[in-house]
Length: 323
Image 1 (spheres, rainbow, N blue to C red):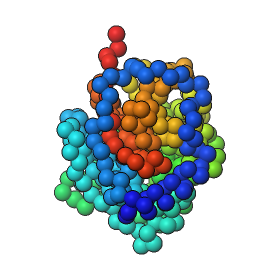
Image 2: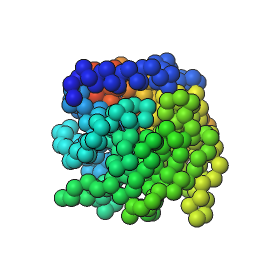
Image 3: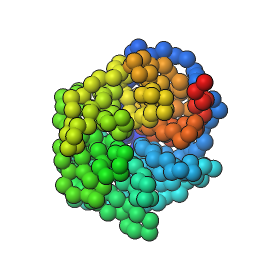
Image 4: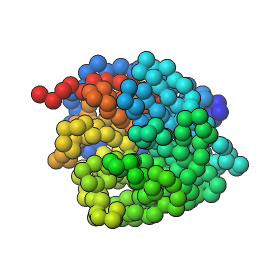
C-alpha cells in the first residue's frame, strides 16, 4: 500500500467527517502539564500502512499494538524496536465493504495474564470480521464472529480475565464474549452508544464494577454498570464536550483518566467531575492520537496520522507521582 493510496483512502473518509474536528474540545482548559519527559520514542512506516490504532502493555513495558491499515499486530520494545508478530488474512474483496472506512483494519487489542493476545478485526466480510486470538507459536485464529455490517473497535477484559467486552462503532452495540470464544451476546444497545453519522462507541475499559466507554461522535465518556449475571446497567455520562474522543486509560488516581482526542490532536486529563485539561497536543508530536496506556508512571500514546498523513508514532512521557 503506497503512501499516496493511504492518503486518498483515509483522508477522504476521515476529513469528511464532522466527528474529527480540528478544534479544541469544548470545556477543556489548556495547561501543558502535568506530564514530563515528553518525547516521540518510535516512528512508524506510513507507506507500509503502519497506522497504530490500539495498545496493550506487558509488565516489562513492551507494547503490543495493532497497525490498522496493514492488518498487523506488532510489538514495540522498551528501546523502541518494532517487530511484526502477525498479519491478519486479507479479505477476498480487499475490504472495500468495511463499513464507513472502506478498508480492512485491525483495531482493539488486550493482553491476558497467561500471555494470550486478543485482537479485533473489521473487514466488512462475514468470514473474517470478529475477535481473533493469538498464542505464542500459533497462527492467529478467529474465535468469535461479529456482524460484517459492524465495525468492532474497542476491546476490554474484565478483572477476572473471563469476559471480553467489544464496542461496535457502527452498530452502537457493546458485545460480550467469554475468553474461550463462541457466539457474542449483545450486552448493551443503549442509545448513548450510537453514532451521529460516523463512529459511535469506541474505547472501552473495565473498572470499579463497570464498563467505561467513549463515544467519538458524541464526545462523551460513559460508565455502564456491570450488574449481577453480567447484565448491563443504564449508561451514565461522566464527561462530555470532547468530540473525537478515542481510547483512554485510568491514571490510578480514582476515576481520573487520560484520553486521546483524534481529530483535535490532543490528550486530555479528565477529572472525576467531568472537567478536562489538555496535557499534550500537536506541538508534542501528536498526529491523530488513537490510544493511551499507562504502566506505573510511564505514559504511552499512539498516533495514527490518519488525516495528518505525516508521522505515525509512539510518544512516551512521565506522569509524576501523586503528592
